[in-house]
Length: 297
Image 1 (cartoon, rainbow, N blue to C red):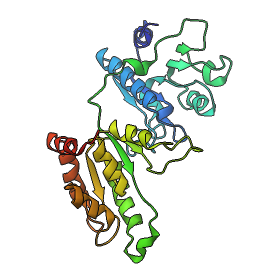
Image 2: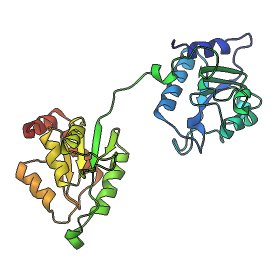
Image 3: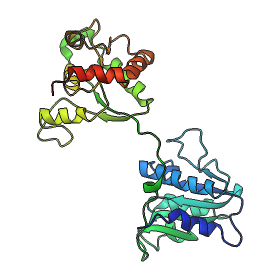
Image 4: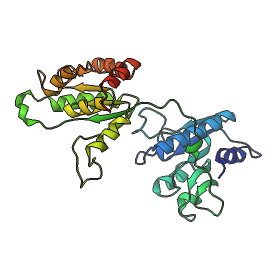
């Protein structure tokens, strides 16, 4: 399988007339009722880089739900573009078919796509399709496989408690969890929701303590409101930010003090600035070294 999709598209665009006006780059990441997957976005990145390298001016239409304020299919003026290029995903369904009506004045190309039904209007509406699969031609390498990547961000296990009714009026769990998740939503990291609760009848949960330890050992950081989120992260040598969800401090605070772990945040202090400070420390060499000292592996 050759990485020839961008080359094939560029050959098409370099026809006798060449591209007219600007090119509009679209995909399932463009639809308000579609979705932006990692593969879709990397395919867009790869194709955009190829277009830029070839000196072809273009814009990308993004779903307002994924990139609010960016150019969207609704705000893009069809008369401003000579070519519409659709990348990745299946050329199937009413969303794709609607592109042909809205951008009827454009030359419409599809690249790196799956042709589910060659007779479907979503497919027949394209003037040219450079498919990754679904045609008689040999399968082509997916566009996402060749996209340039930036540095990979940290992987963060998030272990939160919503119960602990025994603390009564001192419980701040809802507010603390909201502060933590809102803050994490703005961090460049891969978030992994995790539970210390074990189960043998739910595939989403670990069934043994060793499975949970294996999970946190492979993370760069654990953010938790649970005592055992703190204890078990440190046992694997993984840095942890522990937030005590009980006003005045309870078992999370007591355990952090018992083991001498400094990255502890009180229930009334999970502000972004405080969490950011511990984030920087935990992911630094100092934080990793401190966590390694607690490892009992």
